Image (cartoon, rainbow, N blue to C red; front, top):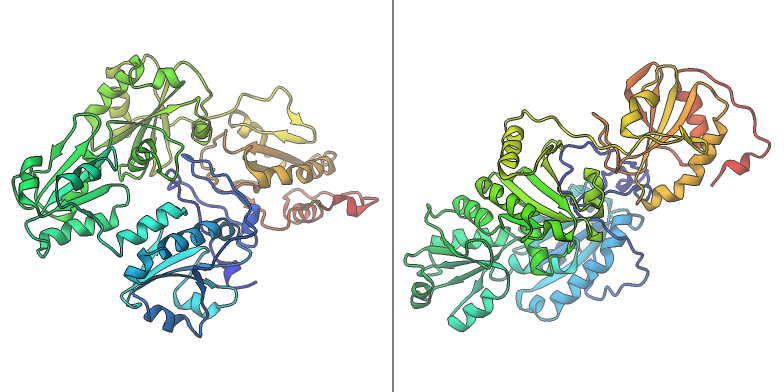
Length: 530
């Protein structure tokens, strides 16, 4: 097994997964899909990509190359890595965009390292998963890992923030009007001179906060006209809620960061499927999504019921206004096809009647508001959960009309204990997702396995859609995941990590099942293979 294949694979940026434990197949990352519950990613193949602005480095030339440029973005990848293949056109596109002029001005280069061929470099820079992107600056003296969105726009924006001015320098009223139109909320500062600490604190914030748009001026007349009367001073201009607000706290980076996060966010933010934040709606959603606040409240409903003018949305807004800085509030339009993953996560179907949930993204616990949807009811619901007194909600599909689907038993949240925790049977459970392409490819093989074990009374072959059903203590990030619940040890399921063919699975079951069984020899073993 190569160095890279022993690595922990790069996971998609996930807002809600901090409570889960990943089950990763370390031998083949292409056999699992990982997901962000707020965004469903469409995977596409990329055979031909123009990488003329990407340099391929080896151990022999790496140090010289990095030390000869002010800034170098380096992707550590492996040719077999699925996520690396998805990143390839975006990374090349970012390199091309930077090379158009900006890269020459600030001496920025993009490069790649194949860790299968360059084990020494991978070890030197402690590469534990692929793809990993490192940004070297100051002729290689400084190093920072890139962990934002894998898109051309995000990478270009990130690089520009860390090489040129992180905040747009505004010289006059005309510049300001252009800057003001760049986002639905902008952060604007006045400093008497750019040479003082005042400017450094603000610049550091702008460099590291990728969710907001920052501007700055040293024009005292312009600042006074805009309502900033002290230096340093800061104001947030908003096209929503209560409009503009002036910062009046102690001027240091932590206080500035807290103020910007709180005041540039909408009281209630509509869900957006614009994962690249190219639209004002997408930018607003990303600001709220990336908030450090762990509690989220989401109201689901059709387009009319969650529109900001609807009675339900107004009721939510009234309650939300009392929890600014504590809880992030969202509305989710169930008619939006891009909301499918989020709806699956909460077990919500399209409906005209709104439903409200609360989520703790640190624990993964979800709670549903029962009863009438009044402002007081929402506030009581929020207070109960903040106090740790709420009862977590577990989603489940309806019980299947038939106990089995062909040769495989169907498990949902409501019958998990009856089927999987049956102490008279060894149960092999596939946890899959209906949208997972790898699961769909594996389905015929798993059905063959179920048919093969149909006459083995001590073994149950079962499956559960992990995106639509939840079970206490079962945390799944990767699909499909195969778990063996032994008859004599239901509390510690054994994960299967071998080849996904009938022969290998059968052999594994014979070796690990707690109740011995014998299999009749097949007339044509080859029929079991994929």
